[in-house]
Structures are given as structure tokens and as C-alpha cells.
Image 1 (cartoon, rainbow, N blue to C red):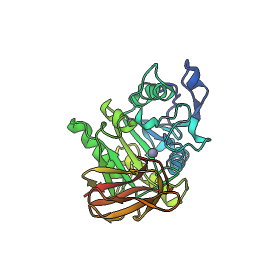
Image 2: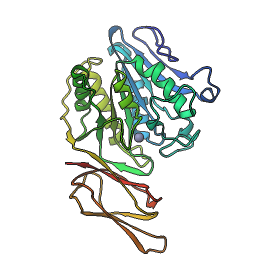
Image 3: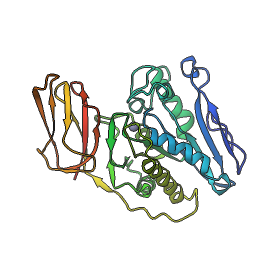
Image 4: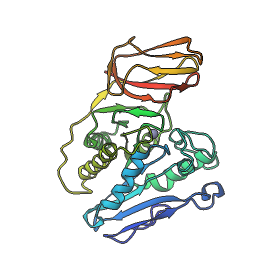
Length: 321
Ligand SMILES: [Zn+2]
């Protein structure tokens, strides 16, 4: 098999590691991206495993590296390409949410633009040169440096029953308790998994861990979940015994009407009822300035862990039930 865009693929039965860049673009060429490529001895699908599009979501990054080092290439059917850190500008800067080159959230910029900002050009080249050359894609996330979450997967259906069935099988194999079915528009357009799906790649996003902590259980959940997906796709052999997730009806993000100190009164995984008091905001001398109530009944999927909140700042999200 020839290279996948800028990523060289080794001979059948071998593993290759190294770095690549996006040639011809001086802004992008300042960085190199790590990759691990595994070429099977038997033909099969090409699977892309990515992490670190949010640079401080370390459990996904660690799990990607671990999978790359532990999967034996001679046990693979097809090809597995792993990019452990997509947001290279943000990694050593410990950037929260955004890419320091332009201050944008890279997971809102797809499909990107050939002549756009740094992030738009990165999104365009990643999508056209690498992602769309793959049959399947799994993008790993966690709660960011200032977020905690309960594990969940996100995917969107396309209306193509064959592709949708594959996407649902991938999402079910991951083994999370919760799933969000999301449209590529609304508050969070431009996500890698959603745009990849629309471009013909069976893609999902998986969340495990958070707060900048490499908690082994959270890393291992990502490793196990992706291993199960690879088994489901026939890339690895073995049985999958994952329970299908509960699909929430909507994914409601709660923002603060004011700037201040946020006191969160719920925990991730907790059930809440619509209009329950779930937190409050005080000013910086302690005066109460906002009561935060649940917009819907459901399960708390993530919360921020930092109390420092700007006006309209994100507080938490509820998966409606
Ligand atoms: Zn993320």
C-alpha cells in the first residue's frame, strides 16, 4: 500500500513510527505530527485513530500511543494509522479548548479552507489528504483540563443505511454507557467525526477521562473501546462483549448568564430533573448573581471543574432522557 497523504505506510506485517508535516505551507510546516502506522499481512479496511485535537485531553493521546505500540502488525487485517496528537501547537502549551496559532477550537473548523486561517488550513489538509483516504475513523477525547465527564460516544447518522449500520456498530462496540446522536450544525458545527461521516468515512468520537489526569482506568477504557471497534470491523480477531449505550434525546449545553465564581452542585453521571437547581454563580465578593437550573431532565454528561467562568462560559452538559 502506498502512503496515505504525508504518512508513509510500511511493508505488510510491519509497524512504522515517525513524524510528518504538511509540505508547502510554511505555517503548518513549523510543526511535525507523530504517527504510528501498522500494515497487516492480509487485506482489510483502513482505520484512522486520532486524539489530541483538544491538546490537554491526555487519556485519548496516551491510549492512542499505547494502541500503536501494543497491536501486533501481523495480527492486523488491513491498515491502522494512528495520529496521537492533532493539536500540535497546543500540546506543550497545555492549551485548553483551542489551538494557540489562531485561538480557534480545531474541532469546529472542518471541512476547513485551503487558504484560510492556520486551523482552517490544517483541517482542510487533514481531511482531504488523510481522513478521507480511510474507511473508518475514531477520534478520541476526554474532558478538557478544566472538565470532568462520564464516558460517552458521539456519532451522527447520514441516511445511508449501510454506512449508518457500521457507525452504530462502532459506537456500540466502544462500551460507554451513553451515546449522543448529533447533527453537524447547531452550537457545535465543524467537528471532525461529523464532517468525516458526511465525506463517506464511518466515524465516531469517544470521550473518557478528563481534568488533565492520566487515570489508568480512563486510559484503559479508551484502549479497550478502540480494540473492541477494531474487532467489530474485523481488523483484529476476537469476540466483543460490550453493552450498547443508552442514546440521549438531546445534548444540552448549559452556559452562565454572568461572569463569576461557579459552584457546581451536581456530579458527572448524576440524574437531574428539569428546573432542579444544579449550581450557582456569585460575584468575586460572594454576592449571589445567578442560580443555574437544569433545562431538561436527564444525566449530567460533563461539568467544568474550574469555578472561574466568563459571561456565556460553559458550565456543564445534560443528556436528555
Ligand atoms: Zn475534546
